[in-house]
Image (cartoon, rainbow over all chains, first blue to last red; front, top):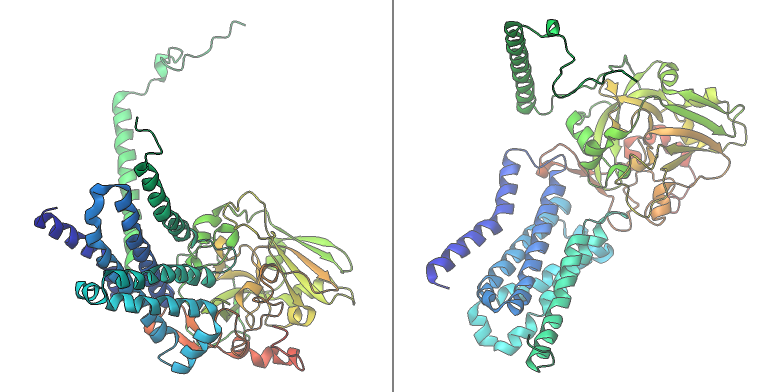
Amino acid sequence: MNKPTLITLKTLVWIACLYPVALLGYEAVTNNLGPDPTKTITFTTGLAALRLLVLSLAITPLRQLWSKLSWLIKFRRLLGLFAFFYASLHLFTYIGLYSYFDPHTMLQDVLKRRFITAGALAWLFLVPLALTSTTGSIRRLGGKRWQQLHKLVYVSVCLGIVHYWWQVKPGVTTPMTVTIVMAILFIARPALTWWKARRKNNLTYAA
Amino acid sequence: MLIRKPNPLTGTDIPSSEITPKDTWLDRRKFITAAAAVGAMSLAGQRLSSLLSPSEPVHAAGKLDTVKSPLSTTGEPPTAFKDITTYNNFYEFGTDKGDPSRNAGGLPTRPWNVKISGLVKTQKTIDIDTLLKLHPLEERVYRFRCVEGWSMVVPWVGYSLSELIKQCEPLPNAKYVQFISYFSGKVEKWAPFGYNWPYSEGLRMDEAMNPLTLLTVGLYGDVLPNQDGAPVRIIVPWKYGFKSAKSIVQIKFVDKQPPTTWNDQAANEYGFYSNVNPNKDHPRWSQKTERRLGLPFYAQRRPTLMFNGYGDFVASMYNGMDLNKNF
């Protein structure tokens, strides 16, 4: 991929990633956040975080599927960091608008409400990933250790999905979509690796 | 049979005397076009003005004559009509807040009958128009607190349920009142899986007889929109909103605590009493504070009031009861 194309693509992805927070800001200023703006802000930032995280996890399976898409790797860090950005906004909404910056309330919530425990842990596990997202970190940690550390993203996305399910009322199934997509992605990696290994060992005939 | 069937394509059976003269036809076309243009412009004008002032109440047909009530809550600005009618939990019509206003159009509010059954002197059926005339309609502004943690202030229209109950002549062994909502199985295509419909709720007899409990037929001076529980519902302002059953078709007097839909779903989360109580948390979230709707995000939060602020009227009913156990 040549540099101009890469720059164009990256700019577009930046714009797409910034769109949710920009829209939120615009709606806040024009008083268009709906009757329950606190809920709207919380939900929008949380959903954006989850979706971006899941999207970043779709990159490697896609690269395994089609070698032509190997350039997608250049976007994984961008999506991951934006997921962390939205997760942090989501956390800050909770701290400011739900707990009103009261540490006692926050402690109670994290200890007693399991969906908040799950959410807090999901964010916490993203912190070391954000801090070690630079190329310098890969060098300092060494590729293997860096890979091991970044496996935490699976824990984080699972906790994020559980956080969503534990928050909704019985009968509500809106978290189903992201759950199904993530389930597919979880199966995709070992499935694709297995499939490639079969082909390599010539266990299937070429037509 | 020698009856000639008219040829629909060529109209050869139409006598030429019936043909509209061309200039008349052109005039009519001009008239219809002009009328359409005027109609479109006035519609656009209306839409524009409603866009410019979005919280302007758009009244449904059916204004109700109301008198003011001393039981009305004062000092709280009512929530905008738009919010009250587009932010609803009415799961039969979908679980999204905007779903009921989109999907509840099929709810047939006329004819509407409420069956009075169970432990009463005589079982009977009352139609909605009789209910509307049973007692002078009052405007009752009440706070409305949802178990999810948001709240509104709604100017309801109705009269105390006790007026209806007196007319039902319940037997002395009737200890509870059960409310059963409409469910046809046909117009509620969005009802979530795993619920036992129709929606059922209930009150203890003294709670049902409390003057605050409102047999509700309207809001903002007009009949209830479908998504708010048309044509008749109850409002029990000191309890979480799900206790205020919507679109009621049967009121049954029973001697044992009746099953209630949300209690069926999750008994550890939704109790029979469900009095608004900042000291009794929902298992999954705190009830210490609530978010008032219609305010900017930084101004929504306020402390939850015990009994939603109606303790003076209702607290005595629970003297001696452990409200942590009986939630």
